[in-house]
Each structure stands twice: as C-alpha cells, then as structure tokens.
Length: 174
Image (cartoon, rainbow, N blue to C red):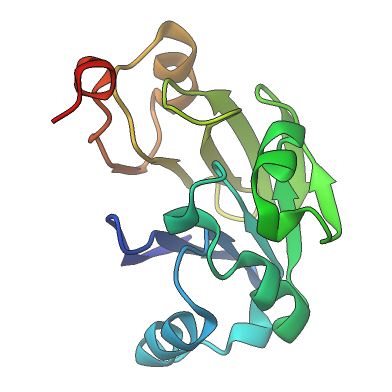
C-alpha cells in the first residue's frame, strides 16, 4: 500500500491511497485544478482514481468532490448526514455508508468510525489492503480520541492524524 498526503489544513485536505491497482482519495478538499496539479507531482492521473471517501461536510474536505466526480468519474462514499449537509453532494450520486460501517472499494476493505467534531456525521477511515494486508488510518479535525476510534485505528501500519478541533474554543470563541 502507498499513501500520499496531498494536503492538510484549512485550505484543503486530501490523502491518496493506492493498493493492488486501486486508488482512492480520502477527502478532496481542494479545487480540481489543485488536485490535478498535486497528483501530477506524483505521476498519478485523476482519472485513475476510483473513488473518494468523504470524512465530513466542511468545505476544506469536499471542495473538489462533486466536480471531481463529474470530471473524472470518481465514485463518492459518504454518510447520509454528510451528504445532506454538504451542498455540493446533494445532487451527486453518493454511495451511503454508516458511521460505524465496513465496505469495499477495489482492493481496499474500509471501516468508518465516528469522531468528535462540529460536523453532522464526521468519521475516521481505516483502509486495509486485501493484496498486501497493509493498513492505513486517516483521522481529520480530531478533538479527542474515544474508545471506538482507538479500537478502529489500533495496529494500523500508517496513520494520518490532524488534531485541531477544540470544543471549548468553539463554545467560547477566539
């Protein structure tokens, strides 16, 4: 399994996973032009990506999802709450997954786990390669680690974790 962080932060988030001929994005929070440029830097064609799995509806995670799906034929996977909350996904064809779900995309077995964040149904993603057995977890905007998340990411070979969510700051303001 290969993993590339295409970007992380308030301007956009995207992680590319590749295994056994399958390529998937975890979030596509940049405009398509930026995604294409960053993929070109690692010699990957956007059309070669099978799907994008969306962690939650915030703009820095979904900005390029709908347009990337239309332009390059990506399948979209998201929770029902994320689909409804993300305006750009409402008219898109979305494969709905649960907050604690297992599903397959090509060579990947994927698991979602709920995370604490100020979004409708935010999830972390764990992907396991069927061909190699390697595993990767992607967790964005994390404020605290709950038991379910801890169990889900336990033992992964690679972990991308962004921890910048603070409940108290949200309630009190800057």
